[in-house]
Length: 384
Picture 1 (tube, rainbow, N blue to C red):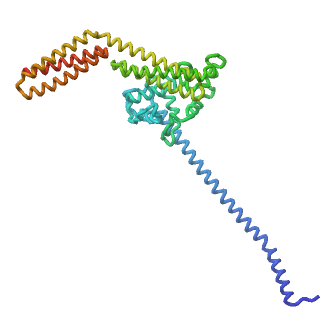
Picture 2 (cartoon, rainbow, N blue to C red):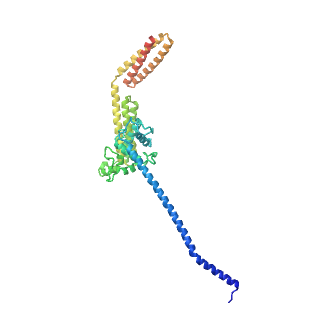
């Protein structure tokens, strides 16, 4: 069998192509493997660099947070109270302002005024601390725990009312031996953080367990507390003794804070805790109501109805004398001025008669005497 020259050339060329492919294949594979290896190495290096950068960033953030916390711990003083001005007060106001139910005005001024004091009292009452209105050691400890929740030095909106924050703080307050850094007992300390401890201590003690009070009983106690608070509010509106009113309003704030907490506990299914808080709120309101009524009664006992009537009669006589003097006056300017005084005295006399009708004899006497004095002075000026 013979092949043409063209066929032979074709066959030889094909063999050369195959031989060249075989010869260059390892080199090509080596180059491909080298490229792949280089690509993988480069990618891994980039990933490692990114992770290192992220680690450095996180480390810096942790250090910054530690520094911020150290600054707060170092600067936040014990014993902050009404009348003081300090940057610490401003920090506390910023925190309190995150919950309008605690600090309705939300003013951040650095001045510890009456509104800040009331906010601290609400904060203390909510957390079952002694309601002093001052930043004592226990109050400071709780405030510092909340400050730990700051983000980049800023206090998140709604921090004090954030769901689950109590539990989170409780876990931080537990020491290595399982005890609370803030004392848990039946009378003081951050009891809202110690519910589990109380539950464990009271387990099997009958009426002291959480399950021993039904939701109906707890709700009934809350309703009674609401009624007592409403009665106290009404009595405050009718009271006249300013000092007694101020004391009653403080008690009202305490009772309302406890009632709010009782409603939260009931909603969470903690019937016993809700019941206890509601009963305590009711007692605070009732005691304040009795005290306020007693002070008002004492105030009214200082003046009798007869004395009030006599003072009003004296004022009427003085006003009548002034009216007569005005009729006989010749100077128009003096007459005009006297008429203005007459109108003022008559208004006071009318107020005195209203106070007499309300059996507030002390106030009736005071207004009647003012009316009498104005009328007499105006008459003397007109005569001269």
